[in-house]
Amino acid sequence: MKLLAALLVASALWAQTPASRDVEVYGQKIHYLETGSGPAVILLHGLGGDASHWAQTTPALAKSFHVFIPDQIGFGESAKPQIEYRIGTLVDFLNGFCKKLNINKATVVGNSLGGWTAIAFTLAHPERVDRMVLVDAAGYSLKRTGQPVSPELLRGLNPSTLESTRALMLTVFANKAMVTDAFVEQVFIERMRRGDSYTIDRFMDSYALNLDVIDGKLDSIKVPTLVVWGREDALTPLAGGQSMAKEIAGAELAILDKCGHSPQMECAAPFNSALLKFLNSAPGPTASKQ
Image (tube, rainbow, N blue to C red):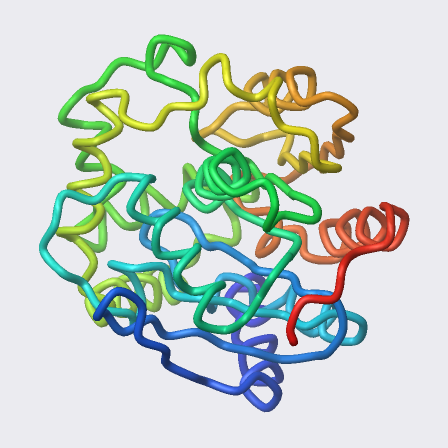
């Protein structure tokens, strides 16, 4: 119950600050939230998520940074065209988003699928990335992680019942006591509202085909990087985060105890502390919007 209460309070406070906007990118509506001023920071949610997943991060950042929180194409309140979604799709739309909003350079922060997007975007458009923060990021191939593709895995990431929603939440969060009946019901309601089941299925298809995986590519990343990981992450285990930090030259690694796959929600205070310490200590960023 504590997690639900914290998220609801954060969302209520957060809703008073960011402006809710839409922009057309490649003929499709991209919904985003915008707040703060200063160097640009773009927050990228994970699979099945939306901008609300950063509700507890945004107020801390908005004091010193110009924060953009898009619902990535296929998710949230953004358009959901019925296409074969892959990470390359998100990269193209993120680049188009930056062009439309005149974001010349930004720090990209991504959780899970959003972290994979941040990596792929940095590889494709290094000139646009000031710094990168990976939060329990996906991206390694199934062969690299040793995880088999099974119907159970696919169904588990795209729940359609209260029972399967509870099972996923118990995997996402380290503190099982947080996964109350009320929390599960609220997550289920939001899933029905978002209507992103088709998008999730297509991403899982692309993952099974090893499209856009990051194996062997991380050593070409040159931007300052912070890797943040929940020690108890059961979806993308800590070993993956340790590998990413090792493969990216000069990357910092912050491990958060008693935390699972979404530190920005479950362990907001230590997560925000690690994020702000990195952003404020890294080389001076470039102005973001002209």
